Image (cartoon, rainbow, N blue to C red; front, side):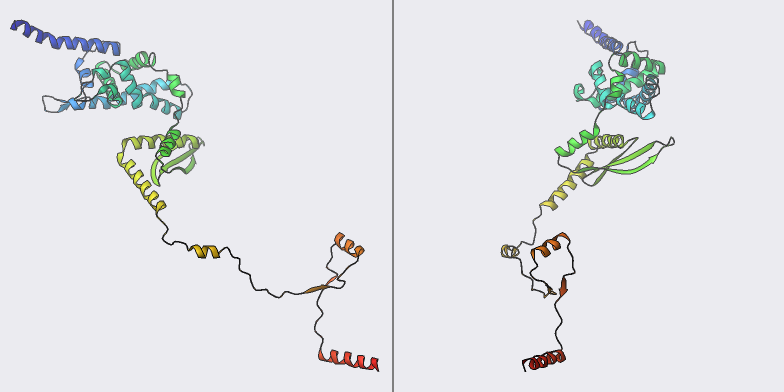
Length: 340
């Protein structure tokens, strides 16, 4: 009886390794040469093992290598697929294809997530862990079979069946809209400031925009249009908000300071009676003005009509000046002689 138990224990590792070979073939399209590389690619750091030198063994180093290989392979594919497209378009397309979300979804779709060994982590919903494992798997393929095998894997297994490269390239992800939606939902102030505008070596205009949230500096983006620069700045700012909790804390601390200042009561309370008195219009003392009299105070109908037709200042004159003493005496004497 005990002999059968020993035989079963010996067969178990071989059975598990055979199952791993079969699962990897379904994913990769070929059988591995060095199975240990793929085992390491599927070993999360939470379940690290120690080698003979006492160093931890996990998939972080293979993840680093796979990330570089993916950039080169996908860059090669995008360059050949979109002939004549500008550098900005190619970079944007490659970034979409190798983004953490894309790789995480690919790993889940292909069943890679089910093969990851970790300690106490739910890999089925962890796109970050799945994406890292995908990159590590590419690193293992490179070490096991070379660059051409990585190229075939991406072209035959990924782009031919799982991803439509044209849809990915021309799909517009509105990062600015997402950032605005986030800021409005959280009631934080956000603005875009154009930092500079210059021209590249081909004399094409290049715009640089920076995001400011509650007065704090966000990320900077450049592009061949204001819209593109704002999109790039928004994308990097969203990533920073997701990856840097201290940045979010600073944003909401600044928001709290602003709202506190806006809600502070006015120390000087207005007097209702004084406010009521302000409605009374004070009469200013009259200032004697220069009086003007008309030579003919009651113009005839014909004269009035003529004045209306052709307004003139000729009939307007100042009040006669006061008479002198000599003039008054002369008038009195003349009146006396006239009566005599």
